[in-house]
Length: 60
Image 1 (cartoon, rainbow, N blue to C red):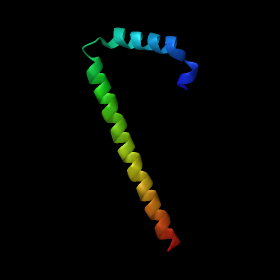
Image 2 (image 1 turned 180 degrees about the horizontal axis):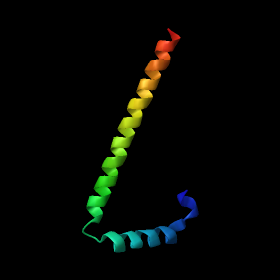
Image 3 (image 1 turned 90 degrees about the vertical axis):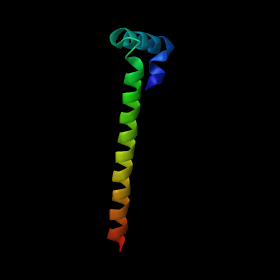
Image 4 (image 1 turned 135 degrees about the horizontal axis):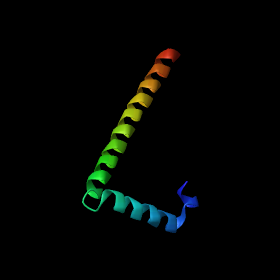
């Protein structure tokens, strides 16, 4: 996905984000995105674990 954008495209995107949110909001934005990704991974792991348990019970 990112291989088609290239380095110049990524730099332009980062500059636009910097202009929109400003330098003071970027750390907060990055932290909230990181926490969201962590919560998403934890919830999908829980769903996958539940799915594995259901499959094990069906085999019995």
